[in-house]
Image 1 (cartoon, rainbow, N blue to C red):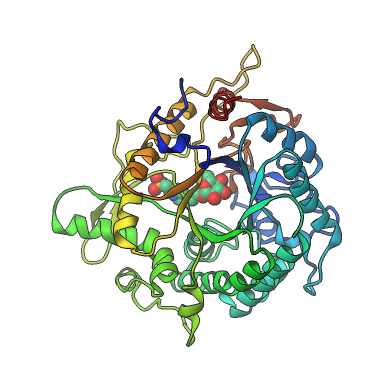
Image 2: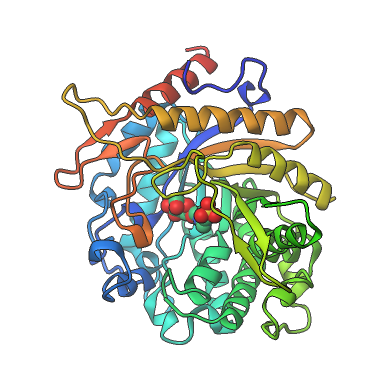
Length: 451
Ligand code: GBH
């Protein structure tokens, strides 16, 4: 058995939710169809030098036109739940009015999941901001937080009654939107200032908090929360300086997002790293951001090893001879257990956790027999399932686990070269092929369901 969690794992309980995930811009394509507006990722991809080989999401997995086939694949996998995101530029026009055709697509998606007995975890924002909002400052403009709350209200009203939405997620990885988008410029909109990153983060989190009351009112049955990409930091040596560097890394990577949400304040030592970058915070903002959430989604991929480079400066250490993925990320399953147990210690009011993304990229090709033998992915998942099981055995409340990703897709600045899918996609023919990992996952899920 190459993929299943240990025999005594609490993840084998029927209440534990297994699924897989995608996001709108990474799979849908059809960027000019049915009145979809331009997003910041369309603009970013069209800017020379931003995305590997100049690729973009115009076609991607053509999911917008292959919805039924992809729903059938989800059914074949036997997942309990599917995590996807809504493309904001598809469902609202520039005046903030609903786009019925765009909304109809998500109704069909939810209905199709419902017919197949698959729960939905719906993310509102997985990075595809309408470009017209970016033209007014994007997440640097406080207004965007209020527009986001309007969008959340509209979608949770329009989609009510379709399928079985178990959870609404405001943002996927605000760290990426704020830091990669406005701080280091590797993601759309490609701006570069730590001060802007801090202000963008504040408005992203404010938008999250502002959206919660409408989501709760419109979808009282569902869980409401947010998803953060987190990683543990380990000191390269036992010196006080390196231990401080590892802690500063965790402040920047994890606490920058989690402290405002769960403690109602930004971590003070963030401003040691970024002197003078404090955002403008209005009275009452931190209360809005700290509104209670029902669950916290964690996207886990890897760890970081750090050493000090003098006062308040940290450096990433790259160890040779360790297992890596084609993203060059170290494979370090133990990090998931360490991270979750640290969260439990650090946040007394930690809500139930879901692993909303975990998975790896590898060079997967279809062989002569029509198989994709992605042994490393199966092993990666099995070891992370085991790490999650150990954290649960030590008292961490984890309720579900979503493999990233359902299928190979547009991997942002890396284009189509990096393949994270359980399902292989031939981007010439749009042919889908279940990799060995998908078949093994389906076997485990079938066995667990007693089918
Ligand atoms: C997620 O972001 C996204 O939600 C998803 O859309 C994307 O396809 C997927 O991951 C795969 O990339 O260099 O070892 O220190 C992940 C955010 C931020 C996680 C950078 C890894 C660096 C790891 N990533 N981080 S390492």
